[in-house]
Image (cartoon, rainbow, N blue to C red; front, side, top):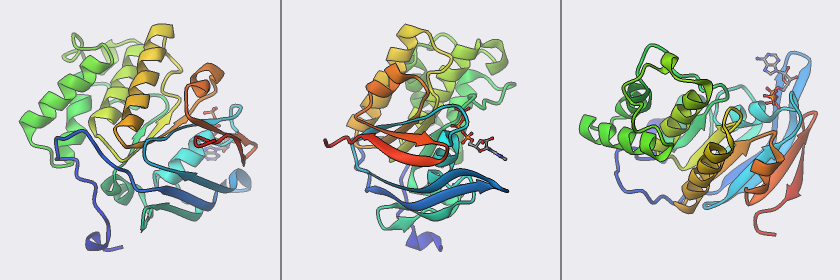
Length: 237
Ligand SMILES: Nc1ncnc2c1ncn2[C@@H]1O[C@H](COP(=O)(O)OP(=O)(O)OP(=O)(O)O)[C@@H](O)[C@H]1O
């Protein structure tokens, strides 16, 4: 798809509000060889919604998020508004952002650099990127840790940096893969509140989690059972 046909998200804009177009999955499937990770999933989500994807380990949660984010080859169609997601770079241009499982930080960069560099890569001016990284790190309680190398941080602190990095991008859709798995109670609640705020800002938040208490705080829940997606709670129910 040519760039001019893609409705670009604008990460340079400094205002917080966003109105995500609807996210629609139709018959989305993910296979790895003979393993069916996700079988023909249908899902709709709208601006302001916070959806939990639950299921046991290996049930396909990450694969579903990767398919939405264009990070894995998938059958079926993922649409954000009128635009069909085709690959990761195009999904990022549409404003589909990811908080990956396991943080995936650059360990030899500082916490601040890990948050600011993706902003610079999207064309955010340096001063604005610095400010947004400061604010995002402060929002996860790491205002004092910005200069620490990622490898000097604990697992939970690294996870909070990854959350800050995802939030700082201010996407239209935020895909959060087990964003609270390493966190103590207070930090889990803090991160869930930040994801809620992200939805309140007009984004769509899709969170994979195996934690029922975290899932209960989302507006809606879908569960994967060996790749089959079923609706547990609808956000508008
Ligand atoms: N790159 C890959 N190559 C082959 N098989 C894979 C790959 N990634 C995932 N799988 C398989 O696909 C299935 C779904 O995996 P996925 O990571 O999506 O599940 P999950 O629900 O996110 O698991 P967890 O909660 O443990 O993170 C599993 O059977 C897994 O072994």
